[in-house]
Amino acid sequence: MIGCGFVGSASVFALMQSGLFTEITLIDADKNKAEGEAMDISHGIPFASPMKIYAGDYDDVADAAIVVISAGAGQKPGETRLDLVNKNVAIFKSIIPVEKSACPRQKTFLRG
Image (cartoon, rainbow, N blue to C red; front, side, top):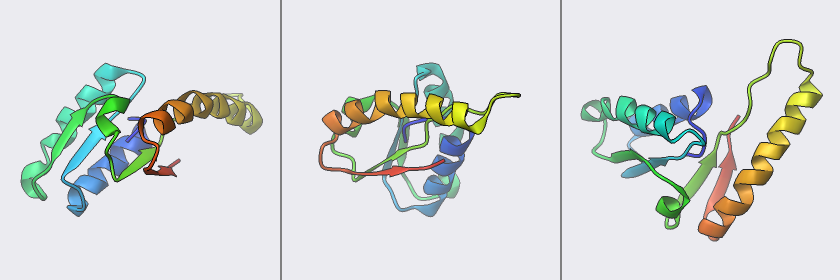
């Protein structure tokens, strides 16, 4: 999961509960946030299927089955939707080339 904001964290929690995966790597521009979310979500593993959840980087997902990108900026008060789209385009332009270089064969899903 690239992006550990509200959507990314909630998505990882749902994936953890689904039992569909044995490993989930969290990647975020703020490494400490990714580590904290991984620790928090890991506390729910005893109630789900066994799996490994940890913070990592793009090298850790080189052999991933899928990559989910949920990164993006939140809308600020007074900011137009067009301004928000432009900010998020810049974020995706910084993520996608790195992700595709590290994970050239994986399916990538955008979640927002």
